[in-house]
Each structure stands twice: as C-alpha cells, then as structure tokens.
Length: 267
Image (cartoon, rainbow, N blue to C red; front, top):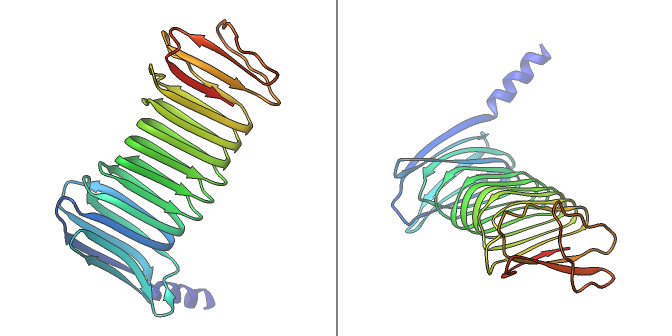
C-alpha cells in the first residue's frame, strides 16, 4: 500500500509543458536553467518549440522580445530546482544557454553558441562565428564547429573534433584532445593532464600547447614549415623523426622544419 501511494504522489508533482513560438532571422535563444538538462536540436522551421518536464509547482515562461526568445522556469518557492528541456530551434539561430547543475547539449547549430554550466557536461555539435563552451565541474566536447572557439573547464577534460578557426582550450585538471583541426591560431593549456593535437600547422601561424603535469603529443604534417620551441622542466622530449636542435639551454631548446615560418611552442 505504501508503494502505491508513493507512485501516485510522484506522478502528481510532475508535468509537461509544450510551447511553440514563431521567430525570424537574427533572433537569439536565451535559456536559463538551475538544474536538470537543456537539449537544443536544430530543425528547419522558423519557430522555437520548448518541451519541458518539471514540477507542477513550476511555471515555464517563454517570452518573445524584439530580438530574443527567453526561456526560464519560475516556482512558487523561488527558483525552479529541476527542469528537463527539449528544445527545437532553427539552425541559424544564435544560442545563449546557461545552467547551474545542468547538462547542456546542442545538435546542428549553424549560428553562434554560448553554453555555460557550473556542474554538468557540455556537448555541442555545430556552431559558427563565436562558439564558447564552459563548465566548472564537467567535461566539454565540441564537434563540427567553425569560427572563434573558446572551450574551458576546471575539473574535467576537453575534446574538440573537426573544428576550424581560432581556438583557445583550457582546463585545470583534465586531458585535452584535438583532432581534425584546421586553424592558424591554437592556444591549449592544462595544469594536470595530457594534450593531444592532430591537425593543420600552417605557414606563419602560431600554436601553443602546455601542461604542467602530463604529456604533449603533436602530429606534424608532411612538408610543414615551422619553428618548434620546447620547454621542459621535469620531463623528456621524443620525436619520431630526426631533428637538429639549436639554442639549447638547461630546460629549453628549439629546432626548425622547412622554412620555419610558423611557430609551435611546447611546454
């Protein structure tokens, strides 16, 4: 009998909201969520559909302004604690997504993407222009994006795949993996973790990969023109092909491949 009563109570406090509003090119989607999940998937409609699973004490507000669609939850007791959002938005729409204890996922975006959470994972497939993904306590993954890319975490790893444009990736405690990268400016750093890079190294470009406690592995394409500077305070350097080292000091040295027009810093 007690189990049946508990089941009835659980069903009574959970409800679903389904709202669709029209939008026009140039508008931005803003979502704020305290806890739960925000999933945004692109579709080919000029409208935004917001499906939310939440407590019956909460109200989902979808407000359409001159340039934005704003989505947030309000509760009779203040901030809504847990909301699961499934949102469909036009691929062209810029996204501005924020959470506290929230996982964020974006699929198919073709505009600018900002996705930030305190405690949760951030996953994004797509994005163009300004792409900024951040989590304090959660892993961050970015795929198939282009533009100015900024990816950050404190306590987990970062993964970037098939990304082009200027890239900045930083974490305190975690590995950083970059594959299929097409860029003339890459800045990557971690305090405790490994760094792996597979991508372009262009003439006249600048790349920096740094870790204080871990390994740095960089794939060098054939016929690369780059000057490589290496700094290691408590570690070794290994190359799969012969190099001629110059400017050697106790902890630093450099070597040149081809014309040396690009710059590659390894620390």
